[in-house]
Length: 342
Image 1: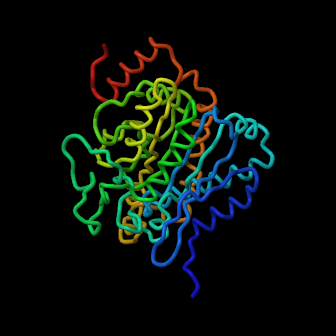
Image 2: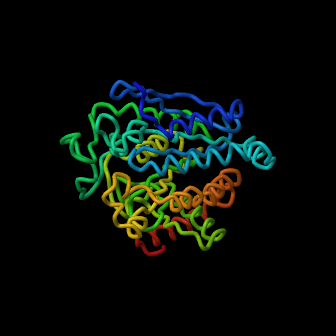
Image 3: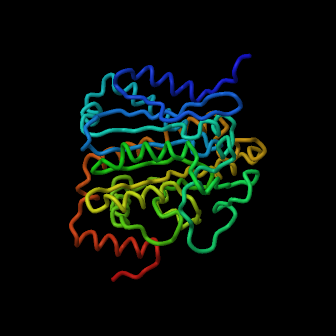
């Protein structure tokens, strides 16, 4: 019996073959569902030196939000073609490393479900508990038949563990690391979120996040992102990036910087333009019309290029002196937390 096609996985495997020796590809985990085995790939491009900065992209954590995987695959396709002739890009990659996990939750992407094959919401799966008032969407352990199920508290799901292993291996050892996790489905604006998601406490590297925002605002004053702590919108338990950031902070923060970002593509705008999409499986989380999908696939290339440049030239935002960091901290607290400047 012929297996049902998996277009996103087939596209990834085509890109891997096209890149050949210019990239390293590893199957970091395999999950089984309904008698079929689904690989989770990690793809790296660029320098293999241990002391280079790293920029990593993660998609498909929520399988229903497959546009995140598709944006990463489109970016990989572009990089693949540029590597053939773009000497400047090749020079950049000799000084840095790009890491990609386009299908963190392959069963969810394949089935068109938010959760993995065991009914677990991977972005509620870590041991992190939220502070303050929470709702059902913050995560629950009543039943996998209900949404936002966190899973067994004694251990994390295989997909979540695979993501954590990749972050530990490729990002924790880097002097500077930026992670971008792509999602969709909240609001009418694209948002760029940073920690914390589990509490409304300012995270330790708030000054660096603010400096990055200021630099982006200056370079691209007409950009369409709302940059903010995730907890400004809602608070959840089990956030993988809070878990990884706190782990990193306990080990390395005095010597390195790890900045996890979540790109939340605002799909409510797509729904407002075509309300009938609400009655289709992917309608709330995915641009169904071809011209809209094409627009989203190219929409974030400016941001990706900016982050790559920030990775290579951090002195204007990530390595500031103490007085500038104190000023950034004060301005960030006023902007995002309503605290008056000191």
